Length: 127
Image (cartoon, rainbow, N blue to C red; front, side):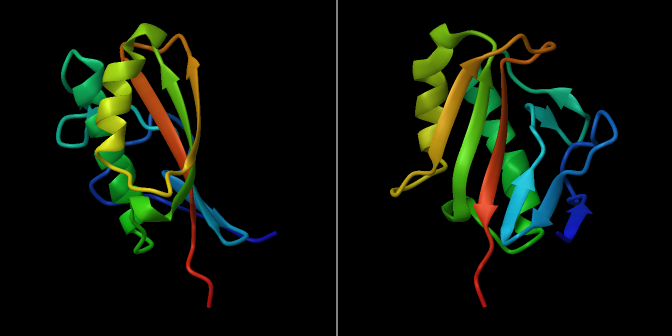
């Protein structure tokens, strides 16, 4: 199975040995992104709504490297520091997607100094 890893211009610098995204078998898989602003690599905002918006803007940069948008996302995995923040997170998340919405898994996770982390899978256009 051929796979191609890549880094997206404007996205936050990876914190370890991983790509921003990988293309394989007709899909683009992103790394898990936190709410870091690439301009300073620091988390933005102290609330889950604004952090969610920044995470999804980071993901948009990665998708754009292959001319994809949030409309191409078929699956997302969400890690929330506190599941009690779900309603605020969900309201911000919904600003970035339209029906048919991607399938989603949301779990509570211990995160390092952030409130939300998200990764997605997007379908590449078929020739």
